[in-house]
Image (cartoon, rainbow, N blue to C red; front, side, top):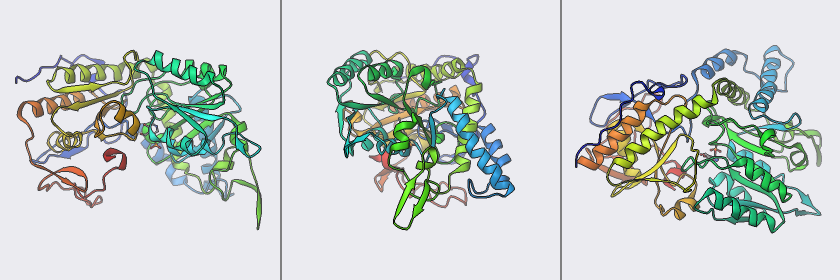
Length: 458
Ligand code: PLP
């Protein structure tokens, strides 16, 4: 087998990162010795923080104090930063003036919160939640605990919209829950059309924008989207923080997400009257730094021309898809035959190799980090004929074509000459045998003994 050559990149826009991110020059140890710059192709799981966000964090950290709980100078500043973060996030997603902006732990938390706020009449849920089989578990499992209806997506987006239209036309759907972009393949769904469809049939729509928001501009007022959920850690902000933005009526009447201090108007020894607004669902001390950095990241993103972002990702994506397709035995996966827009995600398999083994090989022998497994989307992976998983390369503002080149060179070498090291299964994960690579002293687990990520393996 001869080595595949890839097209020249030097004058391409995507040869350089679009924005500076932390950790861009991390040196990853190789199993055979030496180091190489870490090629982070795992933005879809958690993206590195923007350098601007990191600097902002350092600026505000000295003022970090209690929120809503103190008259002191630092507490007042922290409270102001936290409350202002809501306005910044509302602006970022084009929210309506009365939309609630609730800070949560992550997208999963946001969608669970909404599941507790579905309208109830005479003690029964008024209508069902409708969702597709392509969803991330975060936009699938919360609805299984309430009246729901699930449908299998078609092989085209147009066909899938038709399937949803038919289901909605049957009536009794209160909420259509749909992803903005698939976390498995990156394919984007037509949320404007789906919002119109839901409303035509008297339903509301929630968009899981965990993957979409970091990569495309969203305007929920213009798109007529009722609720939007996303996470800071995928949007170039550190810390676990998420957000749910949307219409206040259901949220103000719904079950408080976290019963506790801050969520009440008045508490008695044996009863309570809950407050309304975001505080109703934000019981306990809030994650002010998570909210503040999430908001700062949205400002940075909003200041970058959206076409530059999509162009940068498309250039890397095209290069990667072209290169992978040219390698014998590699298959690139899609859900839809007619998708026209895809965020910075490429999903693929290498014939003859377990996805987890390829991921371990790429990390140990090429310093490439990507995701393997079923991506917390078990129903979709099963339907795509990938019950034991596949590989996902994902990228964004801090990525460069050289990251894609490294992945391509690694896969090409794998197909031509095979693995350069022995690998064993340890605690359900493929790891290099006799791994003596050293972690920094403050990360004491040695490779192979670190706990496996549940969604990666599952
Ligand atoms: N939805 C999608 C589309 C995702 O990709 C993810 C995470 O990968 C989630 C929801 C869950 O996000 P989080 O882990 O921040 O709750």
